[in-house]
Amino acid sequence: MERPNLLILPGLLEDADAFQQVVAALGEVVTPVIADMTRADTIEGLAAEAIKQAPTGKFFLAGHSMGGYVALEVMRQAPDRVAKLALLNTNARPDTAEATENRRRLMALADKDFPAVPNTLMPKLMAPAHLGDTVLTGTIGAMALAVGPQAFKRQQQAIIGRIDSRPHLKDIKVPTLVVAARYDALMPVEMLKEMADGIPGARLAILEESGHMASIEQPEEVTALLKEWIAA
Image 1 (cartoon, rainbow, N blue to C red):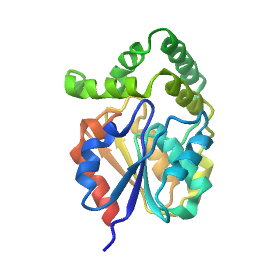
Image 2 (tube, rainbow, N blue to C red; image 1 turned 120 degrees about the vertical axis):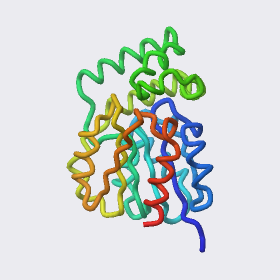
Image 3 (cartoon, rainbow, N blue to C red; image 1 turned 180 degrees about the vertical axis):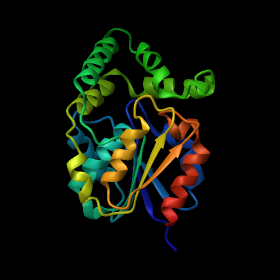
Image 4 (tube, rainbow, N blue to C red; image 1 turned 135 degrees about the vertical axis):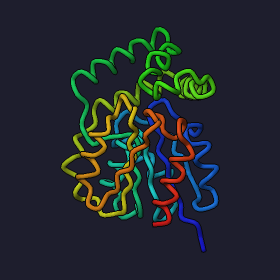
C-alpha cells in the first residue's frame, strides 16, 4: 500500500530540525515533506509557497504555530488537496495590538542583535522543566540563526497581518487533530480548544508536560498522536 504524503509547515524561526525526531519515526507510515516557511511576508503568500512545495495530488497537512496559521490558509486556497489536517500549538485568532507591538519590538531587536531574539523568546517557548536542557535550547537557537533576521522579519510581518480564521473553521471538512500543550505560554489550551470546537469533528489532544515547542520537547508523544491521526 502506498504511503500518504505529509506536508509539514514549521513555525516562526523553525526549520526541518523542529521535526527531526518526529519525521524519523513517521517515515514508516508517511512520506514527509517539510516546507520552507521563509519566502513570503504574508500568510497568503506563505500558503501559496507551501502549496507549490506540496507533493502532487492529495496530502496530509500539519502546521506548527505560525505553520498552523498557514495551514488554515492552505485550507482556504486548496481545500481539495488536503486529506487530513493537524494543527499543533497554534490558534485561529488574529494578532492582538499587544502582540503586534511585541513583534515590532523584536523586529527592531533583530536589526541590532539577532542572536538576542531567540534568547528573549526562549522562556516562552518551552515548559519550565525543559529550559535547563541545553540540547533542546541549543536546537531552538540554532534553528533561529539558520532562518536569519530577514526571514524572521518577513515571518513576523505575515503573522501581524493574518486574518481572523475563526469564521472559516466550520468550512473544514477533513479529519482534524488539534494538539495543545499544558505549559504553552504562547498558545494557551483554551485557544486550542476554541479552534477545535470550531472545526466539525476535530479531536483535541493536550500534552501535559510540554510547552510551545511540542515536537522538540515531547517528540515521542507528538509522534504517537500523529500516527493515530494518520491511521484513523
